[in-house]
Length: 201
Image (tube, rainbow, N blue to C red; front, side, top):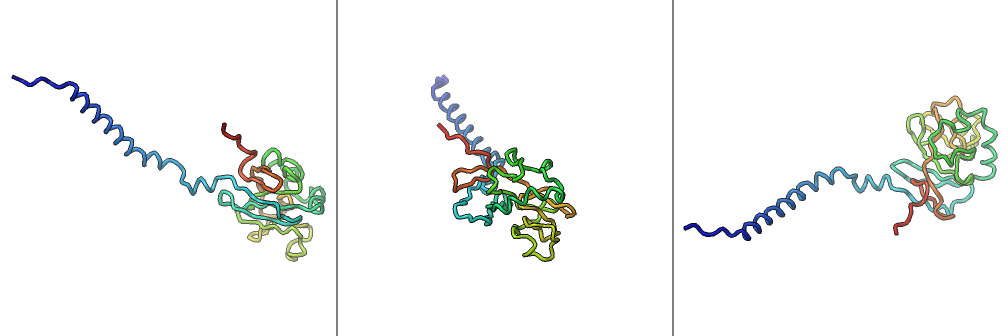
C-alpha cells in the first residue's frame, strides 16, 4: 500500500526551491546589470565642481578641472571689461552668436556677473589648452600688437580676448566654450549646473 503524499511538505520544498532560484538569478544578474552603470570615477568626472573665489584678486585667475577639462575663473578688472566693446572689428564672432554657451552668457561679457568670467580652457582649433595672458602683448612680444590680452594658445597661436572671443586670422574657428555655472554664495561658484538642485523633502 502506497504511503499518502504529504502535500504540505511538497509545497514547502517547491517554495524553497523557487525562492532559492529567484535569489540565484538575481545574484548572477547583478554584476552584469551593474556593469552598465558609470563607474565612480566617471561619475566624479561629470560631477559639478565648487570653486572658492573669496581670495580671488582683481586680475587674478583660478583653474580647476571639470570633466577632465581645465575651467578658468577670471576676476576681470574694469580695464579688462572696458576693452571688450572696442574689439568687434578684430573678432570672428564678436556677438558670440555661434558660440557654445548658456543663455545667460549671451552678452558682451559672456557671463552672469561681468566681473567674474568662467570659461573652458579648451582651444576650439585642436583642443589644446590656451592660458590666460591678461596683461597683453607686453608679456608676449612675439604676439601681434593688436591683441590686448586674454587667452593665448601657444600650440598654434590662437588668440582670444578676455571674454574668450577668438581673433581673426588665427587657426581657432570659434570662441571658447562657456560651461554651465551659478553662484552658490558670494564666495562660492559651482561649475556644471545652471542652478542649485531643489532640496529633497
